[in-house]
Length: 258
Ligand SMILES: Nc1ncnc2c1ncn2[C@@H]1O[C@H](COP(=O)(O)OP(=O)(O)OP(=O)(O)O)[C@@H](O)[C@H]1O
Figure 1 (cartoon, rainbow, N blue to C red):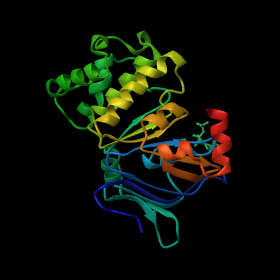
Figure 2 (cartoon, rainbow, N blue to C red):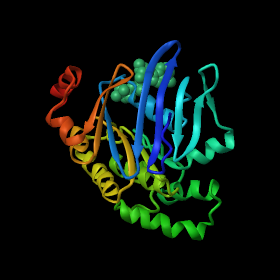
Figure 3 (cartoon, rainbow, N blue to C red):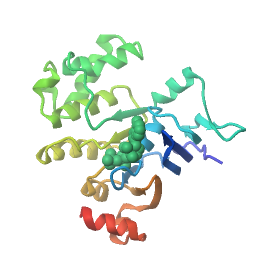
Figure 4 (cartoon, rainbow, N blue to C red):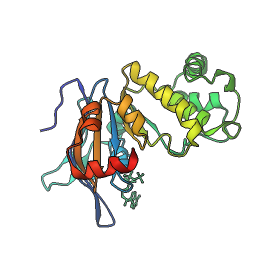
């Protein structure tokens, strides 16, 4: 049974997903708790991004249950196939989660400020004068207020990613999902993005982070999940995970990464 207590922000149970007959998620289950920072690590192709994208309905699942803050996004029907909530409910559930992508996905034809206020105005129907001060406060928070009127092509990768984080936060999500947020950045630019994420974690934002940054997983995450071959092989509190990995596949992976 999926857990629906209020402190479980996302409950995903027995998630299966195949692309063209190849199963890339083989019964993945995870409860993400309020205020938790969970890092999902694992080799390339292990299904980490696909799992994250399923939670946010960027991919549909074949089988399993996804409950977000007590609201069911998908659950198995009598035939054991995933059945989704009606479209309006899917959209409402989607708004509980902010997503940050590896490739930033900023609108190139909009200024930094316009990128941030676009969704609150279009989706939440907020008035411009209401959302602009908030957008400016978010830009200040990510250290980019002076870039308010710049266009994305004038920003570094790290700056773009911080704008993308501010943009996601402007929708007031309860949960932030990060899909390899620093993988497209030059090494010297990852620190500024990780710092912003660390600040969010310190403010007790609930975060699920697919990452190759072992330092971030070790220092910021409360819990680390290791995926391999479309399944969760091992999970533990971050300190225990790195100090004493139990599974030999985890040990081999960490040996390569650290
Ligand atoms: N849209 C898609 N169509 C077909 N196959 C896909 C699609 N998306 C992902 N896959 C495949 O699913 C598998 C899991 O991919 P996924 O991106 O989830 O892995 P990952 O663990 O996030 O890897 P990486 O760390 O390299 O990003 C891979 O074999 C990938 O090629």
